Image (cartoon, rainbow, N blue to C red; front, side):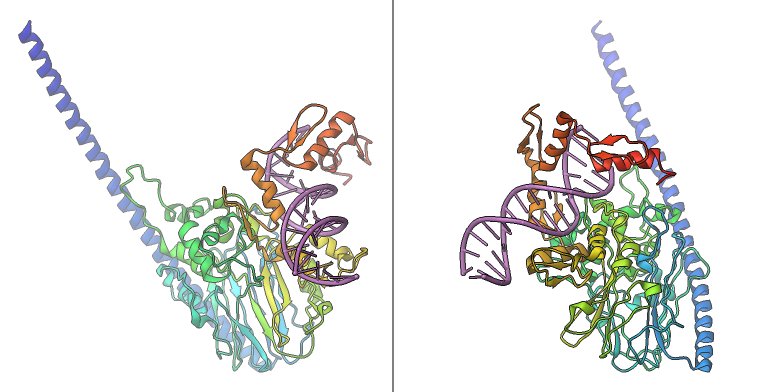
Length: 544
DNA sequence: CTGGGGAGGGGGCCC
DNA sequence: GGGGCCCCCTCCCCA
């Protein structure tokens, strides 16, 4: 019996050893196969990159030919110079295709500060599926010496664009600030930026002749801007103010890549990493894809960059396919006496700006409504669809320069109010502090500063518990009730408690039966306007 | 309905 | 008294 037990034990041991060996064998086979699979993927990626580079080269070639042809034609035509900057944001977060915001184009006639009718600002209304971004800087030759387009920190470095042209897609994105970027008054004979990934016509051309044109990307930020704060930068996705320049870029490089995988591009799916079950294999990141998006992406997210989940930001920041050249912030300094006038038909920026007069600030209110909401790209910030990315013009300095600054996170409500005469509409208090962006007036500078955060995306108040950022201290305080569970507003009739006072007010209508909002179509009444709106949308869409 | 963020305005306090 | 600052209320909107 004892021998039997010993034998049985030995059998069990042998079986265990065999089983382990079998498992090891299987694992080895799996690993080998997986390694082969990974190798194949890597090779496919490399091939893909190679093809992409070839495609880019071909497109560059075509672009150059077109540029040269255009240049010759222009020279022959002896047309007055103008500067065009076409910017297209690719890929609407919601695919609604209203890409107006990011596609603002400026045409600044040389010699005078009024937009010429015959050279309208081109608003590139991309289909939303196109990946091309085009920067066109046309003939600067006629631009007066005082006209400068400066490129500042954070702006897309032309060299990056050249990298794109030359097929240097594999070059890792440059996230660091390039002090040389701000090379104002740097003459350029040609400036071409082309990034194409989905459409054959993606070509960018720019021709500047003897002009001292520099494109500068700048953000208008108030003094309290904390963009330099590493934590905020890292949290930019959460809704912190859009960080201008490369600082934000660097954050993107670090944290935004995973987001690419959500895109619709096959390549991206590969690039963003294959879910490797073995955990020992790191899918090669496709620098061609990643770098393109990152190195060309300048700063979008500004706004809210804000908002809510971290991943969102990346969304907004990076193009789905990571191949977009985004020039979201362009500062154009115009030295001149005459107010700058935009072609209202094209840009809605119909008001001029003159130094020292806030009334002359360019009115971009309408543009706010139509601007692309970069923030919408950002899951974090969860910008509303309507939130525009706007190109705003603000007084920049004591020299009467006009800054064209793209800002995010503008609120349509503010816009609507501004449009409704908010700047001057009647309040008991004199509202002599006008918003440089929307001209809305405020009674004191503090109010104005808070308001302008709507445009700048600045959110100086950050939650210590969840990285949410807020433009107003009170909103942060209110938000923190989410963490503390504090519900200071209790219903006297049912002991229900709320964190918002307005929530209690709405709740009380449950008890009172108050339904002040009646449907104009069917007479049905609702306790809140939003309910009525939903009802009308659902039941009377045809009427509305 | 409820929860929660965005934003404007009023008012008190202090200098 | 005016301005800056802060707190709070309020309304709006969305999920």
